[in-house]
Length: 132
Image (cartoon, rainbow, N blue to C red; front, side, top):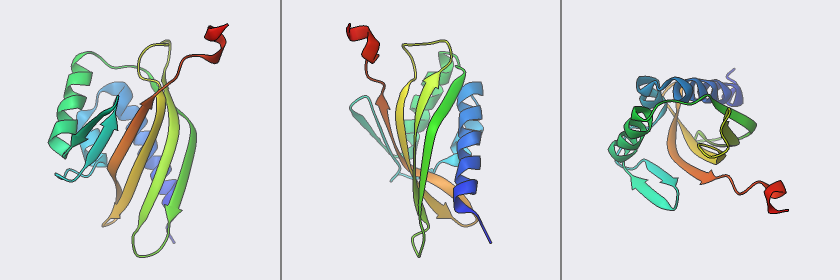
């Protein structure tokens, strides 16, 4: 018997490692490379895998960061759809200005593996203590 949540946690671990090391090949492998892929970030919408792949290439040209995932939540929808939602908070070690926020993935089982079919990145808000 399979463990979908465990498989998705493994995917998220691979995602974290790939983001930290600038491993575009692994990131491509984790995503659905289709014109219907959707990425939402900073109020903008990237439709189609190629557009998002270009964004990743640009990000890695600027360097990589020690990227971390915390407060991971996974909800698997059992049945004929083979879909799931994963959300977490991300942060970059040693940085208060780059890369942090809340991330949501929509995942779908394709064959024997899970693929990210849509994602949304919401930047972290200001530190509540900084308003004092």
